Length: 547
Ligand SMILES: [Zn+2]
Image: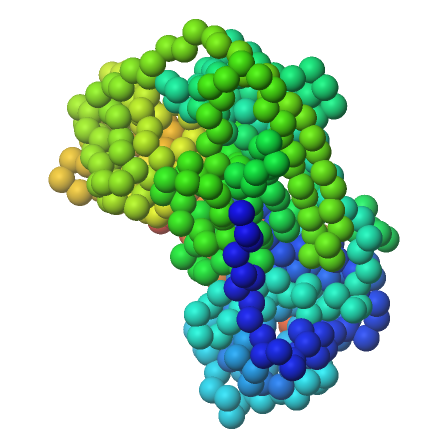
């Protein structure tokens, strides 16, 4: 089989290396590459190391203008979007600071709207940029655990995410091929068996010298990472090919995806394996509902048919962007084994139609396009008459949905009359995770994007505020630790002497800190008021005096 053409098409005379310059004036090293596996999304760009420090100037990679700026407690923290004249938009995340003209506009917006969270769009005239011009300082803001610059390159018209590394290959060396550790064998439901079992089975590659014995329809998956010289990081694998008896049956190329395709990662990776055991496996099978264009397979969508008692020679070929390649060869021994046909229960759902799950007191609507494969849901009502609602197991394993699906659950018992304090809760591994929701006509209504066990809970507990280092407050260095145990923090406000003061919230360490310490006047007594609200409207209000 011929690999289909790469989606990145550039005019023949334009070398990718000429389109964009480096964002930094020091040697580039990656701590993350394009398409690394994450739950619910691919890593949409590259992570450039910043020599272990924050504050490195970030240069504009091509002529254009700042088209958007966002500030969030998690995610990218502070981000700049630059729309370039060449048809691409770059996104730069975890920034410490914007250039001063932009910083002023953002600050004015924050004070005017009394909010830390910002999402502002700009016109081309406001902040035009020349290639090489410094527009920000790199940082460690938002959901970042070490100084680095997260940089994405997207096609401006379609929003397609593409691999920024292709523009910097002349600046970053890589002679190290990807490495794999395990192969997963997936007997197809009711149609395949591996080593006497119809359950999936993970085998370390080093143990595959002893072939597995299989019969019927099975698919494979592989656990692998890429590596580069000069770093200890591991990266996503750009290209995976599977050959059986020298015929290519499957390939995946992580070089682009549209915003709509981002969640398809849940169908390509083994979502349950990640959720239950933190293992990332890439399937060498295209599930029926997976439409990500970068997967290619034979007419059987990568599924192997083992119907002869002989050896089937499998070869995995892994390759990075630089063409560094590694092969793994092993055999599957065809051996007849007893096979139980699948039993289709009352909640058998088909991927190519809309589905509704109904049990006493619960209803889940899954429109067409939400399931990636047929599934026999293991639904169960766990009834306890003391509970606000029953616990509803919608499936016995975490199962990803492609979008948000409406769920309603009956409330059976009303310990309090204020219905704004009720919320839907997802129960996973002994943890309760809020799934939001609103009460109406005896039911809690919400949307979910993953099957599991859900129930209804109450949040009447107000957020906690812990003041930190009070002796430093007189210098304007005011910090709190804020937290909320059930539904989480929705909003916070800090006023000093009756005036709104900008505080930054960092979701990774729950710290709330004053952004402009120098604006707090010294030598006078200040009255500070802090108000924190959670997602069920519980408020905590504290007052402090400091001098
Ligand atoms: Zn990143």
